[in-house]
Image 1 (spheres, rainbow, N blue to C red):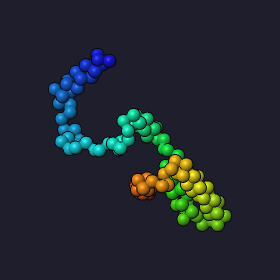
Image 2: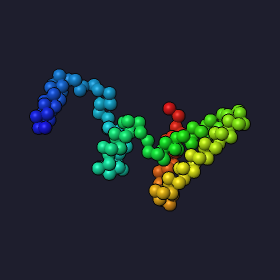
Image 3: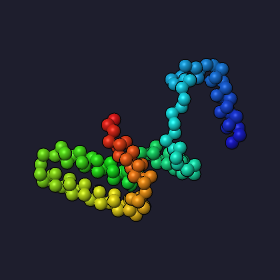
Image 4: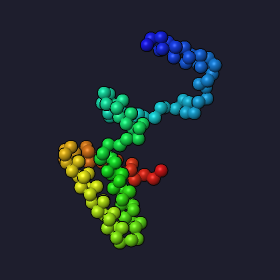
Length: 126
């Protein structure tokens, strides 16, 4: 492993000598804060893998689906379809509430604040 480290460091020094790191975008500016600052060290790799794979925790996926269903309901013109969508939304809300209750997050003030931030993030338009 030390050989690989030495090889990587030599390649970096060589790139610095050639000026390959000069004038990079963001040069001289602070790096963006890591989203994982509040995640315990031993969980960060797992979270990063899941995030890079596009995986969401079940509660986040449910919230995302609930927002989508809400948008569909507001745009729906067919009463039959609207009732069907409202039924799906009710089922998602029930599952979400059950999940939060099982995890004990309903009584947490910290989670309530975090949940507001999650909802705001999910509602942001790309």
